[in-house]
Length: 240
Ligand code: URA
Image (tube, rainbow, N blue to C red; front, side, top):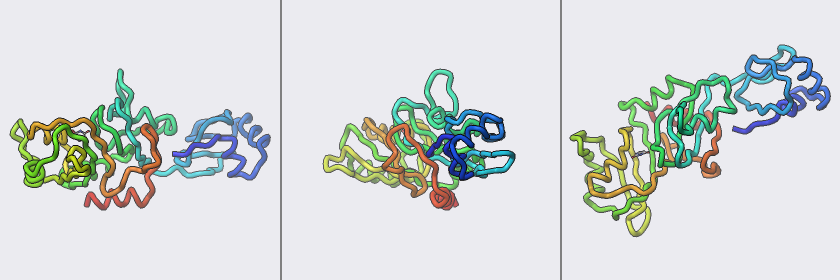
């Protein structure tokens, strides 16, 4: 999400000069999310509650919904004692929010991770009964076969005997090594295990869609932005 300096925000929101903003700040008249803030260079976002002299200048949104392009090597968790997490990548802009990833990608996978503080929304989209589609581009080490396509469509039975819901797979590259997979289920290491049944390994795995919302191509790995209201509604609708 876009950040701006607090002093700049004040000059714009209150139509005052920079030195007037500085004075408000130094007198302790400005709060950010309820805490007095005296530093003009503090980065703030539209999701924060900013008050001057007790007057609310922005109303914080009830919940935060973010689209992150997860880089490799980052774990899909809120906190981890050793590893960098997806929440670490966004947390600085949301110091008073309890954020968590709504759904996981493996440490080696990349792409769309939805981060929120709305537990009911996360529950809705992750509930196995709701079948929210998730789209992946996958690089495999063995060309896609008709047997895999049919097996995915019928529902793959994993090595542990678990039979999965039907999934779609189609080739993207002429050599059949880059494929698109659509899942409506979230089983641990699901795609790797599905290809594993056919003796195929996964070299790269990138998620580029959740509930029909595509990962914004402008987001470099590690970057994020807020989902629009329409995008949140689209994902919510996909869960119904
Ligand atoms: N399936 C996997 O095997 N890994 C992921 O990260 C997502 C789906």
